[in-house]
Length: 134
Image (cartoon, rainbow, N blue to C red; front, side, top):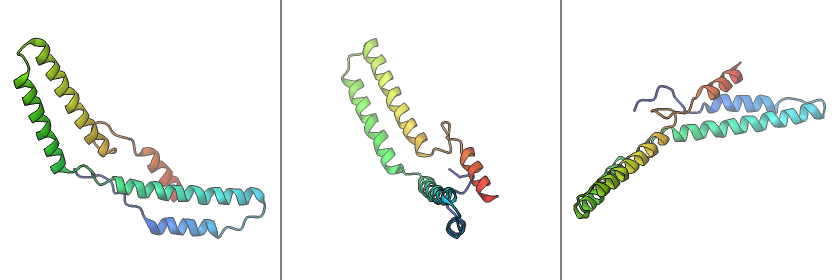
């Protein structure tokens, strides 16, 4: 899937902002604690941006997914051959297949949190970055 935005961290801007915070000269205890808090927030923001960059690459292997689906298909075919042909067995196999396919769908959706049907809004992070850029 194509990504609409780049989530790679801009290390130079982060270093400039951190250097600017370190060059602040606090005059009292309140300003010293605010300086320490600003440095801590900027460090946390850098960690979150690095984590977003690492998570923007899909981590599910396509060959592993193909093997998993093939393996599950063999299991369901084996159960359907051995099960007696009655409504209870057929209904149980259908519900089991629905549950397994739902689990695979959920795993694939959660692997890409900013795309797909189940998505996390990136607007709060973009708002925070916009405020930092001012």
